[in-house]
Length: 350
Image 1 (cartoon, rainbow, N blue to C red):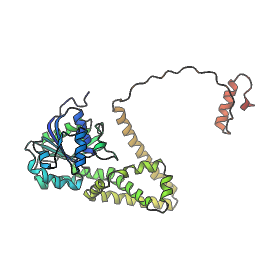
Image 2: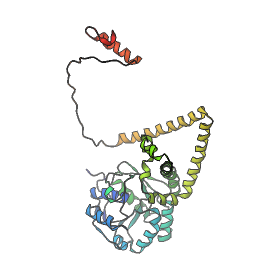
Image 3: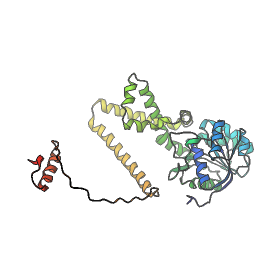
Image 4: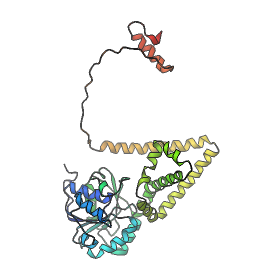
């Protein structure tokens, strides 16, 4: 059964930039029957060929104007720093009815680029940012379920047409996303703290350890915590370089705040201030537990996707044999209790 019963529909959808994020959205829309024809463009000819081969797009062209001409819905899914050039390239071919949206992680620079090309009062551009992704990239990583029960933040401007904003929201809801609205400035401030800084720190930690003379030992014996924290450093370096640059002001504010707290933490450890250190760790754990509860509540709201399995327990054979109980108080207590239930002598209890 479709996630969306068909409220969103596009006769001709165009996507510029055939990466994980854009292709996953289009793939989801296609599976929900929301689009009739999709045209695509990418600087990489192989990406266009693969997208057509796997049914994500119907046609492609090396001429970007040809791809967007006649489209009623245009998705721009390119690196932040490429946005201005792409908008300039498609401006003359965009129809008077087409709605344009993007999927970038920074909204301030995207809005500035859009206003430079289309004017400050252009009403059919709706900035958007899906809070979902993967360390995998490219057309072949496209996942039609990537956005199910994930948030998508839309940041419409004062001049954005309400019908354009709602059309983009419907397109996201069609693939199972939850829509939230923010101002452009607030979005960039929040994402600098919750996404951009963690990625920066992950890259920095891996780079620091890789440059030590003991890096082989470090990576050989790295535990799960290191793996989990640094997983996001496997993302596209080009994409994140552009994001860090585009959201420089907000990222630097957050980085300065973190640096101050990190210096305080170092002082606590250096001075062996166990009380102060315990305070930091306790507050952090409480905050993380609260975050986990939020995620858990969201998980309970998601529909079950697994098949119900019934297990039937049957009686087994009598248990016989000998075993040595380790010298542990709690285990010894249990050994005595089990021995008192046995028929005859119980070796461990003698």
